[in-house]
Length: 486
Image (cartoon, rainbow, N blue to C red):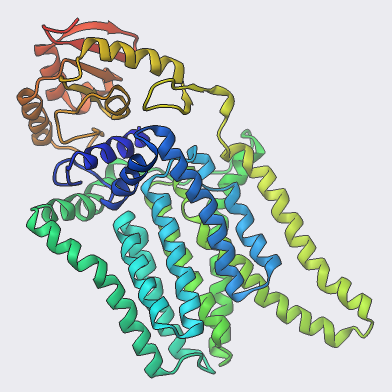
C-alpha cells in the first residue's frame, strides 16, 4: 500500500514525471527523489528502499545521541538514543516513508542548530536553514513544526540570562538561517512555477490535508482495555504519557521564568518542549500506533534532558547533605540506575506490540522485490500472472490502493492516481481517472474489496464492468481482463 506509493512514485520520477503535477500525492516531492536516488545507486527494487530505511534507522539513533551529547553526558545521551532502536522505523519494516525521511532531516537540522548556536557559527546555522528547507520538502508538516520551534528558540534565547549570544549575534544567526532556507526553497519554487506544478502542490499538500484528510482518515484515541495484552495497553499509555510529561516540563519552565531563573538550559528545554508538542500534533487526527511512533524522537530527547536538569539539582542537594564520599556516589547513582531500569522494563513491555512479526512474511522472488512481506510468495505468483496477461507495452489498473503491483510487475499506471480512498476523491476525480484510463486502455484491472469500492467509487466500478470481463474472484481480490487479454 504505502510502500507501493513510494516505490512507484520514485519510478515515475525516474521517468521524468514531477510529483503532484503528473501524479497525485499527499506527500511532498523530495521523498520520491531520495528513493529514486537509491534506485539509481542500488537498483530498482524494494530491497533498495529497505537499504535507505536501515540507513535512516541508524542515522536517527546516532543523531539523537549527537543532539543530547551537545548538552548532556554520554549516559543520558545513550538513554535518549536507545528507545529509537525499538520504537520507530522497525515497526514500519524499515520502509523509508516520507515521515521517516523528514524526521531524519529534522534531527540533522536540530543537531546543526545546537552546534551552531554554541559555536556562534554562521556556516552551521546556514546549514541548519538548508536542512530545515529539506525537511519541509520531505514532510511539510514536520518541517513547519521545526520552523516554528526554531523561531521559538530564538525568542527563548532573548529571555535567557545570562545570554549565550548577544542581540547582534542572534540577528546574524537568524539571517543566516533564513538565507539557508531560501537558498533551497526559492529556486525550487521558481522551477515548479515554470513547470506548472506549484498550484497542484498547494492543492494536494496544503488544501487537501486541511479540508479533507481530517474527515476521511481520522481515528479516535485508543482506550485502556483490561482484556488486551499488557503490551497493547503500554502502547496506549504512550498516547497519554507524552502530553503529561510535556505539561510537567511546561510547569517547571514557567516556575523558572517567574523566579527569574530562566537561563541557557531552560531555553534549550523550551525549544525541545515546543518541538515535541508540535510533533505530537501528528496524532491528533489519526491516532494509531504508526502516527504515535513518528512523534516520539523529540520526546526521546526532551525527557532525558529535563531529567538531567533535575538530577543536577538533586546532586547539589545531596552534596550538601552527605559528607561521606561513597554514600554520596551511591545517592547520586540510585536515581540514574532506577531511570535506566524503568526504561528497559517499559521498552521490553512495549516492544511485542511494536516490532513486526517476521514469521508471517515470505520472500518476494522478483527482480524488483528481494524482500519479505506478508504473503510475499502469493504476490510473486500473482505478479507473474499479471505479466503474462499484460505485455510490457500495456498498462494495468490496480485499485483502490495497490500501486505496488505497478512497481513489481513493471507495468504502467495509465492515470494520475496511485490510490483511491473513501471521501478523498470527488465524483469528478473518478470521472477524470476513467477518462485517463480510456486514453491508455489497461490490459487488466485488479480490484481489491470491490464491494466497498462500489459504495464510494461507483463510477469507476461501472466503467470496469462495462469494459472488462471478470476472469477471477477470490472474494477479496477480483481480476478483470480486456477483450484482447488472456
